[in-house]
Amino acid sequence: MAKIYYSLYDRMLNESGLLQAFAKVKSNKGAPGIDGQTIADFAEQLSEEIAQLASELRTKSYRPQPVRRVEIPKDGGGIRLLGIPAVRDRVVQQALLNILQPIFDPEFHPSSYGYRPGRSPQQAIAKASLFIRRYELKWVVDMDLSRCFDTLNHALILKSFRRRIADGSILDLLRMFLQSGVMTGEGWQASEDGSPQGGVISPLVANVYLDAFDQFMKGRGHRIVRYADDILILTRSKSAAHNALTVAGNYLEGELLLTVNEQKSSIVHSFKGVNYLGVTIHTGYTRIKREKVRELKDKVKGITRRNSPVNLEKVIADLNPVIRGFANYFRVANCQEEFRVLMQWIRRRLRAKQMSRPKRLHRRLRQLGYQGEFMAIKMSSWRNSAGNLAHYAIPNMYLQELGLFEMSSVQTGYLPQTY
Image (tube, rainbow, N blue to C red; front, side, top):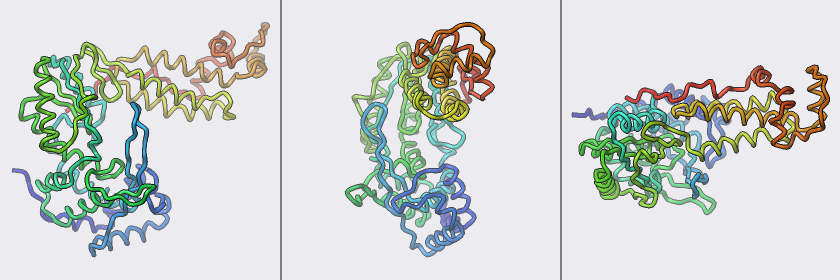
């Protein structure tokens, strides 16, 4: 029988716990809420702010402010609604998360990977690959939930937390965060459902809420992989996949009051490829989705604009976090050749930027001791940026010496431990 926790609220009153929570909020960075207070502003008056929060929590006078609504365009069209809490509210949410996460996380389904300590999307991809290749579960249900975070039912959220938490003050604090409302351009709006994406506590709320689905599917003998609201159900046959889709849809809509997006939910065989978390998982290999490669190239183009008055060292410094992050995320795919081709393209972009004028190219060649004759080529031409003179002026070794991160040196096809 699961342990019930009756007395937790006293831990919210500890100033050292609030300071620890602020350190985490600071490391996550983030924009200000509706009050305009930045993390730096809060840090300037840290002792006073923490003491004020502890006092308000002690006297039960603490009230969270409405979250600031932000609209983020989705890759596939539409918008994602984010709610940005004030810094002081993020600190309290983080302190609450530090108390609740160790209670709930150990009980979660082993194939749940989203927003959990020590877990990653790469592990979710690896688990799905394991099910497809080792266990031959090649018929896959790819489920899409419509506005999952925005439609979580408040009564069911609190019921889910009451399974382990009997401290009314903790539950009241959670309820206040859920019902704090949203500030938009049209003014304050009540939040009758949902836990806004952007809130520190929201990922745990979603995981506690959706764990009921995970455990239900486990009890029915279905293999699943879930990263937040990205759900895969893996089966041996097409008929089993259709059955799983029906069973899962009925539970999600009937018991959890969520909405399955039928147009975006599908059944697919791994031979054709299963799109999941930025990659496509096939029966024998995994590749990067084309859209993700295009997104990377768009970012690189923005950093390596020819008319940007920034020297090559600064361009490479700005470029490295982008390409390093891309390589470290997608090394789970079988993409060694793709990384090599991308690096060729990136180096070509750098040569085109650095030698955008013929005089600059010629001066560089003379400095290197080149004695031959050369035509006044137009380096802004994409074709010319791959010519022999451009390579002689800026060889690969020179870019390496300036610190350019080499994607092709990253081990690919790497499958992390999946639990």
